[in-house]
Image 1 (tube, one colour):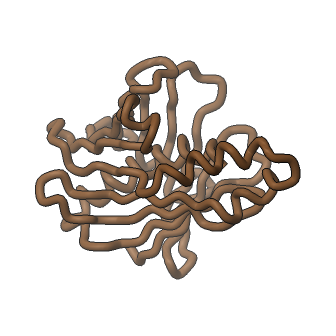
Image 2 (image 1 turned 90 degrees about the vertical axis):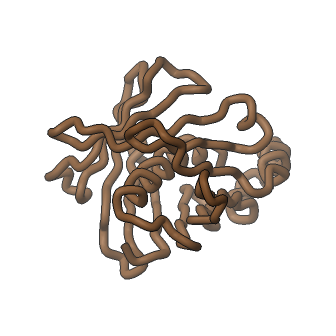
Amino acid sequence: MQYPLKLSFKIAALAPQLFVRDSAGTELMYVKQKMMSLKDKVTVFSDSGQTRPLYEINADRIMDFNARFTFTEAGSGRVLGAVKRQGRKSLWKATYEIFAADDRSLAVTVEENPWVKVIDAFLMEVPIVNLFHGYFLNPKYLVTDTASQRPLLRVIKSKSFFESKFEIDRLDGPADESTETTILLAILMMVLHERRRK
């Protein structure tokens, strides 16, 4: 994959829909969240035409702050890994733990500056100013390898007025394609949750 990766949401879509493109603008994935479902269910397609489903992401429980999301290959159902939001920790700093298929901890994604969230919540209550807060307040999330503590990727919310956009920068990894896919799917799930905090 050619980094940085660009993530942008489809404007005015009823269900959250997300485009994933590389630095050259090539579409890599198209993500669609199922509407009106008690449990989060997300399908990752190869393109926005939704011609070929690549992966499924399913929650293990109904609308829970500590839900775990499992990634499987579409068709075969082979488990690739999972991500779990750390509920209590996430009250201050958004924290997501990423797991391999064998349930081994691969990486952790942590919000770098939780004060952005605090200021963001405050500005949302100020008339007129709340229209522009998405342009100035842009949280960053660092993905760190669990074993070596190496920083692998950084996720940055880009400046935008009307819709959330994110960018994924490569730092020092991941080392192999399988791990990279699992971590990318975890980031997609995180972004679907964190974008609600415009």
